[in-house]
Length: 291
Image (cartoon, rainbow, N blue to C red; front, side, top):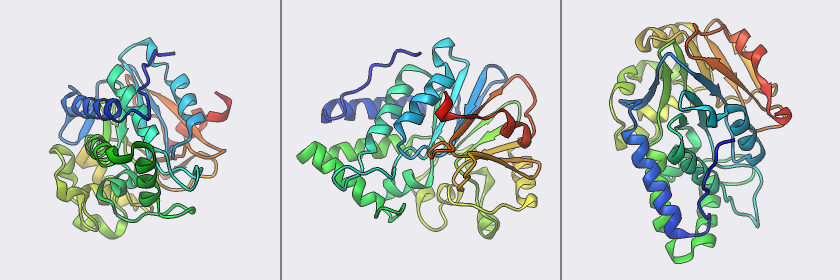
């Protein structure tokens, strides 16, 4: 497996350095076009779903991705924070962002994508997940860990989140993002957001383009067809929606995947081949607890 020099999670100066270096690398990487990462028609792509600070499944994804085999192996990561397991009533999932930043620093094929929980943390807007208000619990952990330096660390975390890709598009027609705009907001969504760098207003609730891209749960075939034409893709790989089986297909273009719970799954795609059907993606998916 890839050798990774992990950053000390309680060293405020080291944490800030890692996060800022990784943020710059995300902005400057050759595959970044506009607000998305664009992958060539070679190599492989490991598609994962919401992770929500599950360290065991994070390690399983690294084993599946086999990043040590070369720079043409790619790994999708998203919804990294706000897990269900608190410590002393605090959410320490900043450490999952830090681990991801460490990966970005050593391998260009690691693609962290924006998700609704990361945007909520960036914008300090209320979001819950069954155990309390996530943003506050996350900030409590920062203050507990870093003391007087916690706000400086938070700024570095915000910079890393803001540098994440809105989505990932492969030249063979595969699209990955946390979600897509839902039916109700599609009329106000501009698909060309992917062709430019994101602005501060894109993260704002309720009409920012990045905000809209990470909250949709119900999609109409006509809307998927519109986005497929605008973005020149055939297959949408999304998360966000609860999938008890880990992976499920919906219609001719959409596959949904979760990587956080007991039924978590992920699947690998060959980027030099046409996209498989959504049903084929489900069939080739692997349970993370068996990796």
